[in-house]
Image (cartoon, rainbow, N blue to C red; front, side):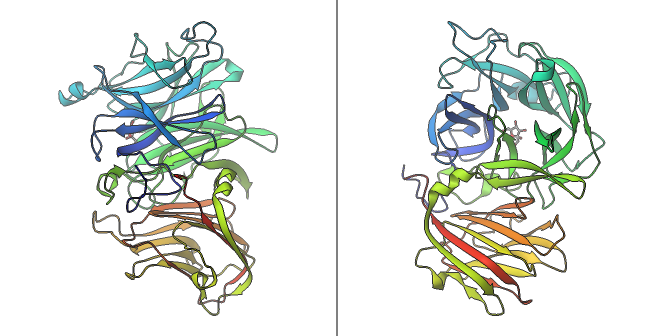
Length: 482
Ligand code: FRU
């Protein structure tokens, strides 16, 4: 296929055909990044789940591989993770080959139909050929269901201090921590969160990661929730605190969001990337994922992002930025200085290339209300910017193009600004059916889908309050598919 259908993203991963949701088993091994994903190859709507597979050398260009895991008599293959079992704790390694082990949820449609609560349990598969082919463990499942209806999405990491594997598992309205020394036998350690954070919907896809900030190890627990996101539908919250190998405890009880946009869900980080915390989310929302107006495929992943933890006014805040590897896509570059927005600034008049796939960066020492307007010849427009009186960033997609496929889609999406000063920086990544906005060094992130029926070919900046831009940089971007 050519990857050039209407709305097909050009700088984001999409499956060649059919349905995709959550990224699974993100892992770096033998100089290759592997991404597995929730996949139903027979339809463009959600169905019996498989693990699709894609590989990348640079986190930007992906090559789709054969399906890694098919449903079997224990159930559909739901979300999960993958680890490198260097010490062969599982015993799956043979002839000195290091096993990759995936830990995933089996969701049994027959038990579900019968109205039983115990239809989700955790299972293993392993690969001895760098993730190309997988063998399911004949002792599956390795973690049985204790009678909890939502019991899924195991994310496993190695806890060096305790020399054991730690699993975070989504268990309805909380995260349950388990530990194991061999990936096959799991011992319950503790529960977290039934009385903390957002609870507008079920908890899914947890991930426990750590950062060193000023010499101190700080833990972050990422938890997706559906519905109940800050702008409707699904979204991903996080908690900052301590983990002692048994229990996670938070520093405070504020609810914080990885991304305020509507379209970053079920995101998790890669295994084995050392200090770099690399994150990919599913760029959609369960509110309308099955209805977006794409043809032969459905859904994309977000750009790969590098996470960091910053201490700001005595709070730890998570920041995300597109990984630096995206710079290789930069084509034509234009740079402007000291733009006074007393008059509108029409970027498209000043550049020769198109804006439908581009990266825009700006900085200012005098933040005031302003907007960036993307539009096309059909008068469809997507407006984003900053509103000073509300102290919020926003993306307004109410007139952005095709919006009528689901009533929740047409929306003005907002995010509070998390710092209080006049200095601002903004990065905007525009693709054929999405925008990703990163402001204040990645502290505020908003990812949003949009479906302009003709490509946006005009970009204007406006301000009613004399917003002065110090620097504005624009790059058109190369497609990752050719
Ligand atoms: C999150 C999720 C997971 C589940 C998977 C099923 O989007 O609902 O909890 O494992 O999708 O496809």
